[in-house]
Amino acid sequence: MLDQTTPRLRPDRCPGVTRPWLADDGALVRIRLVGGVLGTEALAALVALSATYGDGDLHLTKRANVQVRAVPHTEGELPDGFVAAVRAAGLLPSTSHELVRNVMVSPLSGRAGGRADLRPVAQELDRLLLADPECADLAGRFLFTLDDGRGDLVGRTSDLAAVALDGRTVQLRAGSDQWGDVLTIDETARALHTLTKRFLLARGTGATAAWHVDELDTPPARRHPRRAQPRDERASVVRSAPAARRPGRRARRRTRRGAVARGRRRGARPGRHRGRGDPLAQPAAAGPGGPMTVQPPPRTYGYERDGAAIYRASFATIREETDLSGVPADAEKVAVRMVHASGQTDLTRDLRIHPELVQAARAALQAGAPILCDAHMVASGVTRARLPRDNDVVCLLRDPRVPDLARAWGTTRSAAAVSLWEDRLAGAVVAIGNAPTALFHLLEMIDAGGPRPAAVIGVPVGFIGAAESKAALAAHPGQVPYLVVHGRRGGSAMAASALNALARDAE
Image 1 (cartoon, rainbow, N blue to C red):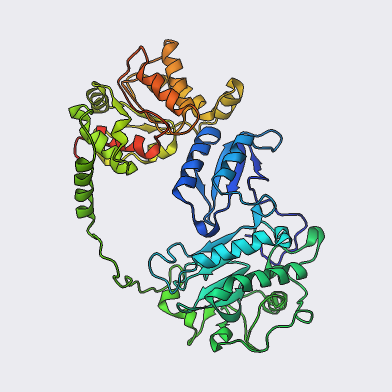
Image 2: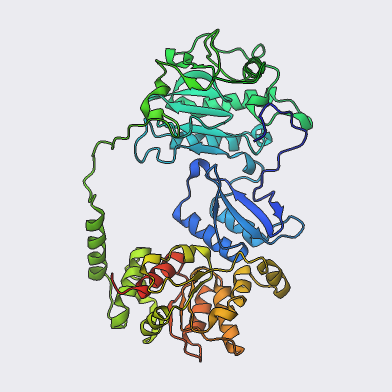
């Protein structure tokens, strides 16, 4: 990893929606998720986008952002529909500030454990960054971290950070180890924004401007005086020096990072190991691999905690609330599992299952037939322990031939990948849970005299082509045994749950 004190001679190249990275397989698009938060509707939108434009997967980054790979582009410009869909999902609130919304929060903050809920701090910090035109100049790698006191982010290299000391206060940190003021949680976002402004004043201009706090050379303290004393002695907590460090490195880094850090005790030495008396050295804040005592939070809600009981009650509820009268008798468990996966007890209103589907699919799987999936998320949802013959589960979206085929044919990669099934399609069980174009392409292959699968689960999701593709499957003259959910509903979870129910009769 490049040392953060190394001078920079070029702008950063972190990708985003407005500035994708152009790779051999297409554009790589990174979508910032403040605090790693992604709502279900936004997630569904990204799933559909990846299936339509990308490789069918969502890729999680080490900063808890999401990437879509293999997106087509024209000289670096993404399709208008892709950008519009990201914006409609609420994931592109600003094009000018898109690349600087890098805020990490302890993943379970406010949900389980930790000393405080720091999610509101992340949202307020994001609001302040977006409202400040100068903050758009931050490098795309400038990182804020908010550790709720459990220690999962405190050891991570960041530019500006806050660590919860208790349920009301946090301690600030600038750079790798410059501990600063202790503030109330309500003051934290604005304090981090203020430190960001100080960094921007000190970073310089042009190609050599610093990307990170640790790269600063000239402390601006004389122009921007610090408060003389921190409000709490915990703000002066320091760490002892590490066992080994390159000669001269410590003094250099102390000077450079002093440009932003506040509240540091005079004479204290920077380092990485916490000494006795440091509240951050307590087990609740131990870093990865360190000692940690995990305790459940106080029980303040009455709810079922036994997993097996939840499972049994869920299926009993589904059977009580779902109208299964129109479902073939041997397909009831398939329908129940699909309702369980989607949470939609009215699903059977649109569910249509060919009378021979269950028999045909189970016979094929018992004979060792492969399962062919349009998306890796469908394939990943298959429970291998339920497969009767350790059947192959195949998705070819990542096949290197796919991008060229899609470009040559003027279609989606999902559809192009289906064409590569031909040598395995005869007698296979097909599951399409994302891309309507994949289902249309499959039907066109069959119409052209191609191999015939044993059964097709056709539940692509979306607003364009989803309903039409499923109607075409149900009305297909070849009458391949099928399962469809008419209308716009569908998705990977439905497709995978249907596969799991067909693979084994046990509910």
